[in-house]
Image 1 (cartoon, rainbow over the protein chains, first blue to last red):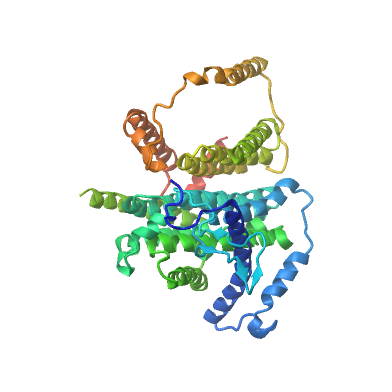
Image 2 (spheres, rainbow over the protein chains, first blue to last red):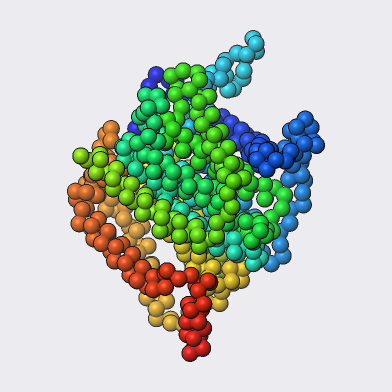
Length: 349
Length: 187
């Protein structure tokens, strides 16, 4: 029932999964830092500025400077805040983002070599590291559920900090969550009906016949809907109501500083990567494990979605909360339901 | 081995968190432990191999408790403790007695567990979602349809209750504003 991917591959051991988890944690956290640099550079390019230039060549060492700042900044907990919840909230965002990443394919399978340059690798030599840390059959549902649970971070942060901007931020979190969650589920239901499975591996295999067999050609409406809902899910710009600086100072993150704020930040970037991975696998064919470049292709697709998020941030203004609710409930949800009905009729006939 | 450790861990955490929900007079603690407990319950489904139900538990209760939060946010100051009013002793006695009876029944359940058999065991080679679907659309079709009907009724009544002034914005439309003011004055 598990591991539909594995036919003639080595067995997945507990050690392999642990190594995979460490790789995901390390690489995605680092990517979150690098993502800020890319974001600032891309935004600067689109607004005809230079962006970070002073620290290192092309401002590359800005990441290190920001990292040092985040880690060494004073960690302030407001006096009237509910201190326990205030401290837990950032961990919820970061942890759920990484738990969601545990059941999507990140990087190809590989086996750690027994020897490198004649030196035997102790302990981990010869361990098979799977591409999905936990290959469960209902991957898509689990990832969506975990990302939804991630919004408890901003919600609790806003409510616990005894700050009116925070309360507004968490009220907006609840509004946003209740609006987009329906659209995400309904939009991704149509591709699930076509493939007949909730497993990412099955989705990948169903689209193995080249560009012509990508699901985006059969489900363009669902793709656009999922993308819009994905922007809301990751709090990216057209829908970043939770911490819109011009309106509510910083929303739920108003009172946070240092690494607690950094954890929100890492969580947001990890969620962006997760949404990009889901969109690439469900609609754009995913990876092709039959040849080496297949994995490069999915990394390119993920990078494209990441770039798209930055592009949209540079190009579009924010929407108001009532506009978001109007969009989700009165426009996107009916379209998604009609899309499902049409898909169902086409499948049955 | 892993499963036993995970089961006891999840059990202890779930019971602990739900006791916080009941005992705490701080709104934020109560709601947060409720949400966390609901999420941890899905762990039991995963342990039993019912991945689909686990994920559904996760999605449904995350959304449901989030809606509860939004009400709590409207009516209470989340950073302060709430003064509870337990005036009716008879009710407390009744509820407490019923909970105790429930607990006794639950703890004595293993005595009868040999007689319990799975009516619909999992089919080999079929996914979790398909298994649930098969049972839901054959044996439990009528309860399923009744649930759908109830949700429809709830949705329609929700629209009727909330939708009287749906086309006009409360913040932009001065007429709507006047109406609110009049209602306030009458009080």
